[in-house]
Length: 529
Image (cartoon, rainbow, N blue to C red; front, side):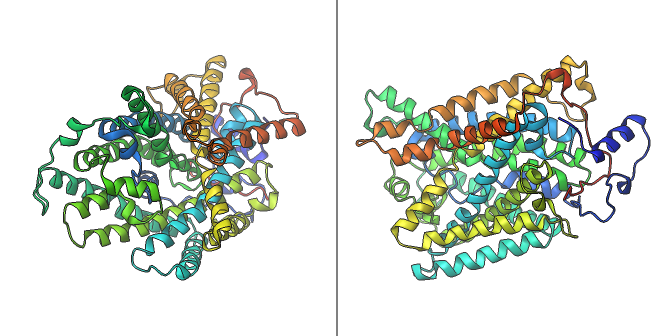
């Protein structure tokens, strides 16, 4: 894959050892550029809290039981950590690149980069109205008038657009505050669950490991017999749900173009993610399993309704069943801020992925135009228009069903992206060996490679393949659910084959692969528009 002129200047300067200033990188002095103003503390908090959404842990306990849920979350958390290490090596080596979109193009095939980029953009841009709608539904905890939903969606949509228009500096501060609130809340809830488990709640019921002893796994999943088969299938359902809960973590790659001192900040963020996310989530699932029975009527009813309200959260069910007053309202308010924050992050990610596609010529060039404050203004406008899909949830049953279907077809998106990241890393690793490049030159080197990337690719491919197995267990066959469970795969394949056919691209030979870094210290990424 050929390098752009500004990249050539960067590489020559880097190899000669001379000091390069930002103004020699672009050809056009007046061109807009991304602003590297995101601080390390902001990036770390965004990366950690970005996966904490509105339906925190919903469905995990009911399907897998306390032990099944814990094992499922631990296994998927380890896999996602391995994926982030693979992505982290590439991001820290070349933070001037367009994230996994450009890595897929340079290290695998331009057609793969095209498919990965548009697939991720679609996933992110559709999730934005989903989160906005979830926030409006959460408000129904206090306001039960459905006619007001459109008003709340409008307020939320305008709010996230204004935050993104303000520039990445203000976006970072906004997300830092809300991420801090989410993390402190989850830590507080973990402590609360520990107190409840030890008998410190108003009901004074010391639960201990009662639920682990009574039914560690789900013996009645889908009424399957024998019980051993039901336990395994329930555990497998936890794997797919846990993968969806961790989804969005790969969005960290969208930030590398706007991170200050990216090789330091991104390295710190990747290292922190693996330990903090796994510990935060695993401890939460552990204590939920200690405090709440998988067969609790409130939990089963919440999973059956799946309406998105705060009452669905296992934490709120524990609060209510333990006799704790007022706290449910506080948790609901935090869930509201979480939904708003998630919508804000997905609008950011979708606009940056569209900008990166335009930079590579895989989207109209005008979408690469950057305003003076570093915002890709046209990309943001296009993505904001998709936020209006949230109004479908306010319509009649047909419109609402269409909205829910759009939301469901994005569920495999993150796992497809994770497999793409692993594939790009495998190819990059092999090319470095072929070209005689030492991994000791990497500013961030993971001890998990190359086996970590292979584990991610194989494991998530298997989970994706069996993702919709429950559709075969329903009578009659639920073809709508089957379609929403698997449509991402042919969608991505069509993008790949179509681009490869029209552009006649080829798999990048290992010996010819551009494994060099294009990053110059303190340089910024200029728009190619």
